[in-house]
Length: 229
Image (cartoon, rainbow, N blue to C red; front, side, top):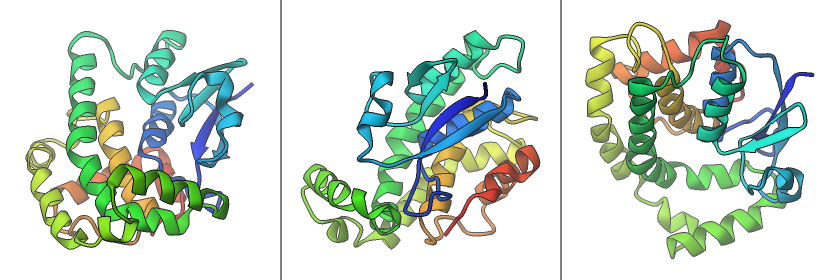
């Protein structure tokens, strides 16, 4: 039985925009594992209740459901040690962990300000009231007000990419000559932007954009096959 990935979807089932889920899409491809995806919406908490979590990604393997993208990556390495490693232990684990913290602490807050209104406009109707109420409670203002200065936020975002830009100018991938799980983690942020919004977060001339293109080319262009913009 193929593994099943519960994957956040918009009104269009093909629009998969969760940065955390994208880490697992590429992790599964990296390990060469066959899998299927099931579109999931914000208000479908009951569907993944057996995982013990309330958010996706959730991976189901032989009846066992695992939530949290980091735990899923660790589980895949433990369950399929004969396949290419994701975390590899030691320095590989620490590299990916640092990358995870940098992406979530630095890039995600800026991306959210740029993307949040577009995400709202692209999710299923049954999710919109929940999404708006929960985010506006968190932000302390309307979605529209929170996203109002996104051009200025984009400038901050591009500046924050300086370490990544320098790295992928020196080498093809975050992990070196070939992509690894740290690349998957960073790419999830950019695929979130690409699949949730038409707003351009990068210039075409940016070395980070060239790296993103290399990531989109992986696995016979797998990530390119999903609706964007």
